[in-house]
Length: 301
View (cartoon, rainbow, N blue to C red):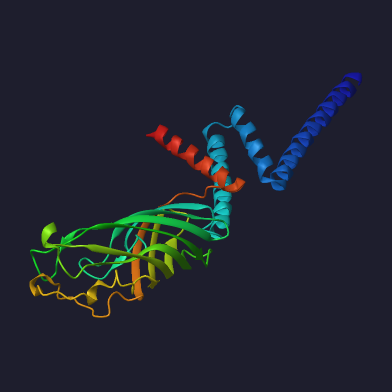
């Protein structure tokens, strides 16, 4: 009888101990789930701890852990992209090349426009400062093969203001000062290899901008506007009114009123947009994860 009672007590104690151990394990699981739901950062710390611990179920355990980590990173990336989609413009430096009025000058004769390069920085308030430097290439007169058009250099500085930061296509407005128009003298210089001298006009330019820019690197801009050159009608600039007796040396493109003070201009610009210079913490973490994934991919290859 005592043996049966002793055996019964042993089984009962073992059952109680097993039940307590099971409850402790369940409570740990519940606590872990609650911690997971509280904050994303605590979940990341727990995932790192699990990576350091030995695998309990082999490859299946590691696969599930990797999948959870990947899903977590995906959610974080989506959140970072959502933040970025609110403003594609702020704190962006853009290197540009182009032709026409913004890079940096439009012309009346010959090729009709210059080629140049510039840089622009867009602040977080969507107000941007830009500068460009370019050249007008030398060419042949449209009507006389023995007459050469002189080349030249132009420059421009200005301010831009952009709208629709949440969209990939941004409408903008620009005010700038610098070389706004060029032309060539009507009369070719016999003593300088039959060269028609270039005349560069400085003034103000007002543009409407249509720009494509997202978080990616590519940048495209079309500009339409008008220039104002206050010195266009000065006697030493309005060269087209000059008379000459040597008709063979005169370009047939003659405007008796001289160079106009106002004129329409346009231009096209391509560029490389650097990532945001002052990103928030979420964007910084996303960039770190992208680098880690690139390194892991290189190791697998």
